[in-house]
Length: 352
Length: 232
Image 1: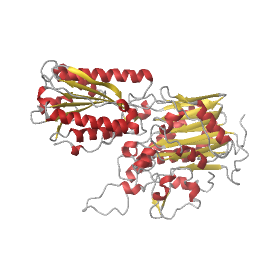
Image 2: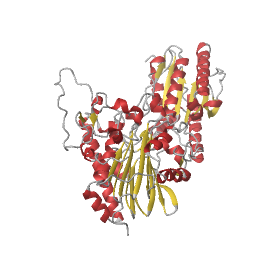
Image 3: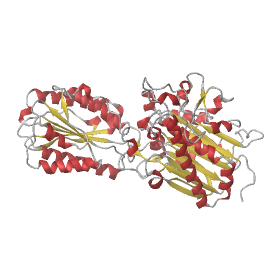
Image 4: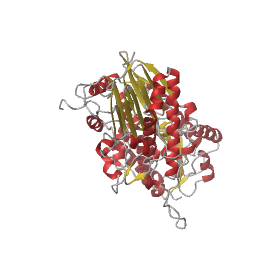
């Protein structure tokens, strides 16, 4: 039986770093991640915005990840997940993907762009002590430690060419490219975007390069933090892709070095942050059209990420910790802060 | 490294992804003189670029095939870093059909060897350059084979017309996607500079969607403008 209350069951680390080819072209990070824990429950997501629509796709990947984490951390979801069979749990995760796609659609509408400009992959893990469910659309890398075995799961069956993948808004993606798996007794897992693929898998087979995952989880268990993880990732110069790199690592067990969770709350959450102003991508308005004072509201309320000048989080550094920070300063040109309305509610117990 | 740094073991043994490119060029007798001299010079500059660009030298693979009365592999398919300039010799008619078939054979063989070696690859490129109209023998069948392969996303085709005698209507049949581009004057150097930059972009590209009709307008790897070399 899992422990009834075990606030430090999962230790999670995450970071996104801008790829070298993006830096050379002065582009931002199109990858995103988010994760959260609550008692013995953990949810994590990584997403890779399409390079062909760089900049706007960063908002697709960001909205996808934060959507998954905020939905999964609702009491309704965690209760349902705790009580679910493996099959029911897989259905619940599929629901997270569907909601993420709806939010991306709303976000695109608000940004006045076609949804394809926010094209993104998405890989998700949701776990309780005795059951972990993984799912993805796209070419993310998912590795699990179960028993004494380390293996990559749900690898994408590649199209013929190296630079193609599925995005969650691709027509037919949920029918054709959505994969999920339920696995028992998972003691560690990793989610990564494909920017790391040449360094952490055997490229020809898609299988895990086991030493990478073993040493990575050891770093988590020994109490190293997101900044150290990001430093390691930035240090991989010859990554053979030049692409943005993102990694979320979770392990059971907590090092004595890891600070205990804040008193009065057991919910933790962290995410990366896009480096561009979401309103900057709007198509230019014709001169004779009315000024765009009030943006077109999406049908689904409170789904799009909007600019706000009043909602700067108290602990802003934590709010963006471990992200594509190379571009962080440019992210908020006028001192304005953009904050996902529901994510905002989760900011209070930041523990990164 | 301090004890507090995040040390990991990385896999350093994965081969780089490849993009194969066949340059298929007309060396019929009408190309002799200035055109062939400029072609030779442009190809040498292309070789120099690929020898020296760090990523493209490992990831771009090039073969050079010429056609006059017959088709010849002047430079076998190889990595950019080992490529050498070539001497072109003009002779005979314009047996483009033999050239197309030989080029497609090379591309298919290369893809097969990539798959067998577990090497990821990008869609191969075929560049066809001619200054006239092709011989009739076998042309229809060769075009059918080429169009079919392009239709299945098996190859990216660029047809380039050189000089005033090009039959653009016939040349236009080589690709079902791109219209042929006339080379301005004899700007082979500018063309090969564009080709180098384009292949470099492809070999360093990050994923785009291969299945999404919605993103057709924004998919593919952005290529440099053609304005430096084409008269179109």
